[in-house]
Image (cartoon, rainbow, N blue to C red):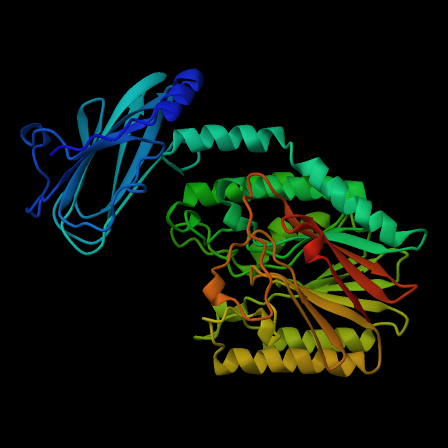
Length: 486
């Protein structure tokens, strides 16, 4: 018996009000062949309805041997050449305005096919035919133009997300709430204060906007500088398969960073090296993009190691030295990953030796060498462990003689704190998501929607009481504040 589902009346009502088309689908089960059918000969479908996005979500993925017909429209804002990418397991076909553009038929694993077509301003019909034979099943449909970054087809979500993020209704209230806690703690005492942004790549195409939101926080708190602990997202999907998208993220990230009139401190992450389709960024290129632009603004206080992505910043009139490291040397050294290179550790040893006795040190990097910072599914290689031990030993030896406030990192997509051999180690969550099964017992993670929440830790240091207080802006709120002495 045929089974027709309601076509989501609310979705259609919203679509009709906003001009957003739903994706209509029809499903037939028990298709036995290893190729696509002629859908006109199948008769009525077993399942029919409408959804927001053009993929397999919401359909019964527990079955094999089925076929689906998707139909929707694409609103084109201007005459442009459109690039279409269809990746499916198993077979598929793509039609634009009844013209067959992509044939990806047959039983197979995920295969990507591309096609281009000039489209004039207005609405155009999209039809995708798909079938699953057995085992894996997937369908990813993306499109882009020279002026539209590559995106998956989900018009309702893009419309909704654009409205949320453009209005920024959640930004200032969440910053203000955290600032109220900070002001009460600070009182009349002098502080060093700075926001940390990290792992913004998990906010996908909104990642660069969160850089801007961090600037809003920095201005309200009167920050001494800003910190970006990397993972901008140049080798995270979809940048890995789309150089145009990666370039778009790069451009918009820099544009946001340029809006801050103070100094940025950047420590590269493991997701900052590629820029789509195998394009590799050298340390010199990353330094030119995210460190050198603030050298002049720092007035001689920002010191960069030539051709490397590590260095230090002496905060004017505060007595603090901020050391930033590159923990991604693994890109060039064998099978080791998350590596603080020997050259870098030797440089750090010399720098600490030359640091004035009355200067307080903070160390920043993307990756945490302390065991609490590693993904539990990623066991360090012997080379990585050796580098971790060397760095922690160096910091511990320095802490016995001078003042080291803390080593602060991102990467783990969790919050955690430990004190080891006289050194404070603090991991800030940032925008990363985290599977519960991957977390260590001591890890904390705030689950949130990045379209409606910030996830920024404001770091505040009070020299008079030798105290560090972190203030969570947005996700998790005061529950994720951390306090420790040094």
